[in-house]
Length: 390
Length: 138
Image (cartoon, rainbow over all chains, first blue to last red; front, side):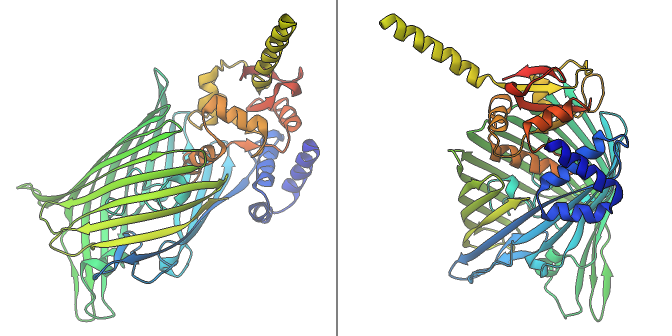
């Protein structure tokens, strides 16, 4: 039975347009795409061109409860916030990823994401090729997520974590993706540890940066634009895991430039050198979940004197898996040296895996802002929703 | 009478042990790679993509909900279906690894593994025949 389906697929695979076939495969069960892929591996034309679709979606609703200043920014990269009126626009999103296997060693990935904050205009967030040079070395080129934080890579993928969102006190930077190259070294070290090292280089220009336009400098006119460019981004990520333990450290440096464009003026700030350091230690033995993260961001105003200010962020989260439920509690903090931006959040939540690929989540957040500037607010937020992968 | 009850119980226990140790991990008979329980776990978690002879390793599982699959995830990887798909979603959507293949039936897995030296499959031991090689049981 399986064999005849397989042969059938192989037949189709050779004689029909792969893309059309794969579009069908994305709508109908994934198994068909899977069998199609096996078909190509098994056939004499092993590794013939194949396309594979996967998707994810989050539907989230939330509102704030506060006396005043009731806007709470929860998605810094996309500029998504909640107010005292229920909305589904802030964090609802859907993504579709296409993996195209060109041959045994080369594949291409494109990820398209539509967000409620951007009126669901689908945009290409990731687009890169991966070339496997040796079993241990891979090189990727194109557009990828900037891996500053532990959850940066799967920030949009609610299904991959127990929160509604990675804590907004930590995941705060304006630049989220980059264009460049990434080299990956994967190896198994003694005592069953698995080690992965990434080194990347690239840049990102965000001429109409959502965070800057929203928070940094309020628009002077409707033609106002505030851009954010990070040049010469160079970073490394070292990830080691064994059984329930995962350890990650990373570093990034870049030249940060802020641009301003309004009806009557255009301005480009001199680039400042920035440095980012991160460390996280996670544990998940199937029952107990412990997540921790500590990050330091430095911006140098004068590289010769070393004058700089810094921002610290950290979080700790505890969860416990009871059958299909994960109750969890999280504390996250943002602290700037100059006292301008200081806020922290205490979150309580529940994830319920009622289906193998869909989770229901509900979460309450208590955010307190101690900063001199007003980046966040003293607000309570209730949000709930569904996360799915398909 | 007591003795019979004792032996019957003992027999049932033995039987139940067999009932649980009924999952086989299989490869093509020509696959000479060294494959132990730790390697099997790494391959099905995407942490290794090659056998120790450097030939590409492609994991192949029965579909979601299949009892052999559920037991394999539990005994070999200490994960349930949800944890496994959550784990893989991280790898898939960050381009770190391609997901394990799935076949509709366990007969299909035997058939595919017997024809492809890259595959490493999971089946109930009752499906095993001479066309595949067993490298681990659970």
